[in-house]
Structure formats: C-alpha cells, structure tokens
Length: 235
Image (tube, rainbow, N blue to C red):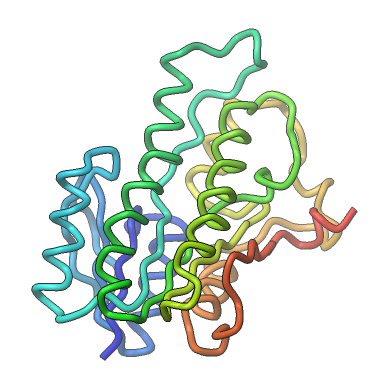
C-alpha cells in the first residue's frame, strides 16, 4: 500500500489531490492547522508547517501508523496581501515566507530524512507559474514561489542516486478559495486573459499532474518544475 502525506490538504488543490490518491487506494494523511471536513478516505493529522517540531512529529506519526512514507505533497501555502513593493512590510514577508518557503523547507527536511533511509520516495512541491516570471502587485508571493522552485531543484540534486525524486507542479490560475480571495482583493484583472486556453483550471487537473509526478510513470524525472497553466508560461 502506498502512503501519501499532503500538507494543506483540506481545501483546493490539496483536497483534490488527497481524494485522487485515496481513489487509487493509497493511505492518505492530510495535515493542517485546523481539523475540518476531510476528503473521503483520508486521515487528518494536525501540523503547522512553520513549526519544525510539529513537522517532525507529523512525518514520524505517519510512518508509525502506515509503515512508510512513499509520496509527500507539500501544498501548504498562503498568498498574503496583494500590494506593490512599496506597500509591503516585514510582517507580510514573514507571513508568506514562513509558510511557503520555511514550511516547504522543513517538510522536505523531514520527508527526506525518512525517504533517504528507505531508499525510495517521491516529493512533489506545489509551486506556481509565478515562480517562472514576475507579476505586479504580488511580489512577495512571487518571490516565495521562486524560492520553492530553488528548493525543489536543490533537493532533487541532493537526493539523486538515492531512489528519491523531488519535483514540483506549477499551476496557473486555478479555481480555488485562494484564487477567489485574490480576485476580491487584488488587481481588477480578468485572469483568463493571460491563459491561452481561455479559462482557469480546476484543482482536479492539478491533482492529475501531482499523481503523475509522484508515480513510477515519472521515474526518470527529478528536479523538474511541471507547468500546468493552460499555456500561460509558453509565451
């Protein structure tokens, strides 16, 4: 049986990914700061990815309960408050980077600790198409996703040859609570205009990409950032 751990797995992309893995028969652990309505077939474990002790305990409890950690999806993230660079503050920086970057680093640290000892495993970080280019009005979030891409590539090189792979999926605009918050507070732009396919994506479409990257079908892929963005990064 495959054991899958998903941070930020209660809503949006994380929830769709948890459901997709559960439908395939995996043992699925979803982690978050607050218990909520769980995806079908998933087990909830409390963890704040900004707290190393909680992340360590989350990984250890997952292995204790299910015997291994085969796939980890680091999805926990926040968009913070939109605004120009001159409007940003140290508090905004800490809010975004502590979750998106420190949270990914701590998760990878303890997932790799287990996977390297097992000599197998796959980590999939959830980045963004905004890790590929800049965007006005959301600079700190953009910077955080560039950092996630850097962690992904560096982790892949460190784990290469060990049987452990590290990749990332980089969604474009996806119909999630995060996108709806951004649309209500950010620049008044139609996000579909930057997508050649002419629409926003669905969480289920990103989940399919995560399942692929986590599976043996992607066995010769590591250090890759897979863009699933309707063509937004092609131009």
